[in-house]
Image (tube, rainbow, N blue to C red; front, side, top):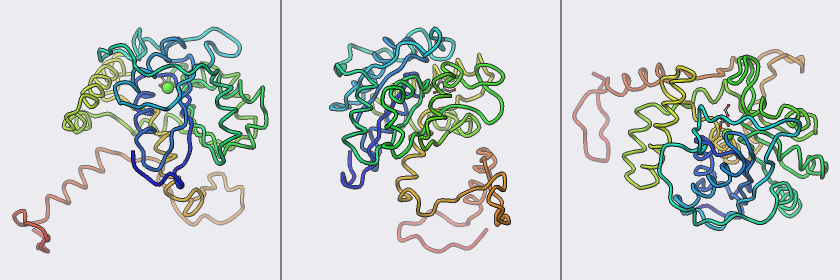
Amino acid sequence: MTGDLAQRQPIILDCDPGHDDALAILLAAAAPSLELLAITTVAGNQTLEKTTLNARRICTVAGIHGVPIAAGADRPLAHEVRVAAEIHGESGLDGPAFGEPQVPLDARQAADLISELSRSVDGLVLVATGPLTNVATVLARDPGLAGRLRRLVLMGGAIGIGNTTPAAEFNIATDAEAARAVFESGLPITMVPLEATHHALATPEVLARIAAIGTPLAAMTVDLLAFFATTYRNVFGFDSPPVHDPCAVAWVIDETQAEFSYGRTVCDVYGVTGRPPNAEVATAVAAERFWDLMIDALASYAGEPSDPPYAAQELG
Ligand code: BDR
Ligand code: CA
């Protein structure tokens, strides 16, 4: 891991691994601009016991040591847990074969660890990629959390159609009472909903790029994504599966590199500021169309490949 410690953004990742949570862990631990202080787990994609084991499995394969993994809520605030075995399998991380995890479980409760770190670390960002039960639990015991965190970045919700009920996305539907408490807490929140994450598709091209890395971790990631692709195809009819959770981590990485507020583009969607519109805003990328355009443009340049320094070439 590289990067200037003094400038790295401290984060906690609260998750329910889960295939895409696994990718969120790998991104959070490797990003030079982030300092991953803890992984906390919650019941969601599978039972708490399984999601916690899965976090330890991923850290073991990736060689992520020294990041505490603490278990949290084993059920939503007001009802029984609803797992997503149809998407993530019986283990919650079906696909690869894992050995015994070498990374230990921290003895602390997730809520205690989050509260403790929010007191000792300035400017902490909490990234939540599972149901919001742990976050709501901390807020209930320690409402001051809302004023101490820099931000909560959560993968969850939908502007429009849900993926668990016609109205609701899985992380919110699993513990809507917790989500309500979190959204009403006064915490600064960035929500990364399905409309955004459905652009982050693990296409066969993406899989080929990952496989080409050639490491055991890359091979495991391909196996994970291959399983995820199968269930997403069977359940939702997607050609390629959307990797939701690392999008929330990626949001923090880009925001961090933008120095938090410098260059922020504030979009007044409902015109509440009364200012005249000064731009049109793209809210999505048609990825295939974009790459067709880009690759066609690159292919239109004439000439043989040249050794560096790259000679200017005439348009063909
Ligand atoms: C969310 O639900 C879970 O199955 C995924 O891990 C992700 O966090 C997407 O709706
Ligand atoms: Ca998740």
